[in-house]
Amino acid sequence: MSGSSDDEIFIAQTNTCEIDDYNLETDTVLSDALNLEENYVKEAKQLPNFDLNYSDISDVQTPNLPENAKTSLRFSKPLDDSDLKNLVKSGLSIKTENKIRWAVNLFSMWKKHRNNYNSEEKGLLNLSSQELNEALSFFIAEVRKESGDNYKPNTLYEIVISIQHYLRQNGRLIAFMDDQEYQGLRSVLNSKMKELSRLGLGINTKKSEVITIEQEEILWSKGLLGESNPQQLLDTLVFLFGLHFALRAAQEHRNLRFGMNTQLSVMYDLEGKNICSS
View 1 (cartoon, rainbow, N blue to C red):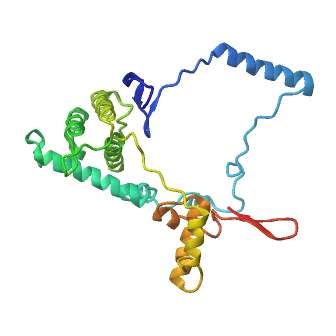
View 2: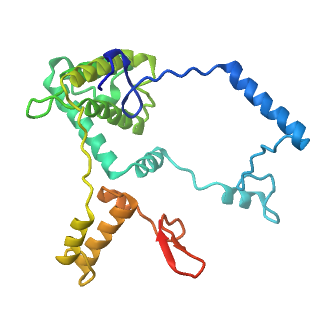
View 3: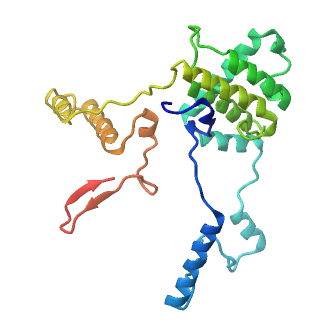
């Protein structure tokens, strides 16, 4: 990062960023809050109502039903560990699952390559916290692309987080970026990311190029966009969704919903004319 020293870089939950100095004084915050309360008392003669209303939370009991019927309505059938794992996996996108699978396979390949961790009877899930900290530290310091080139700093971070996802899916509720047991891993990852940044890796990020009005007109005039046939109509819808909803990956398009929980809405003016969609 231009204008920043190495010491200003730290590992955040999603990326690397610079530390900003915030000078918030507790006394000032409390004073402002008390002044706010005093003004309400003077002007409105009462404090504002900060009660939170949750529509689904109620002490009202279901009437005219036996207790066993109420219980069967309130709770679903008992679940087992596999049900919970499937529930967690269903909340992950296909892209995230592919990243997790790739990162775990990459670690397994490295483990077989390294004599110190070539023990087949002890897989990733069976490593102790101390063994995980040591193994992942060496893994992050040594891993490379197939071509022998270094990965970008953010890629190393994503590898660590993907392995963390895998461990959590299988009952190891750990936090590599917070738990004291993995201080060594954090230090290695932080230092490696700084080293790669000094080499210029990961500084220039890819950005989507904007399609100009002229380019869009060419797409229409050449028949690449339109409604003449099913494929052309499908391509046009994908283009328009990406243009107006900032959707990029195919999975983001697939995640669009229509119906009860739709993410789409049509706006009309006072005359009933369609003015926009969102």
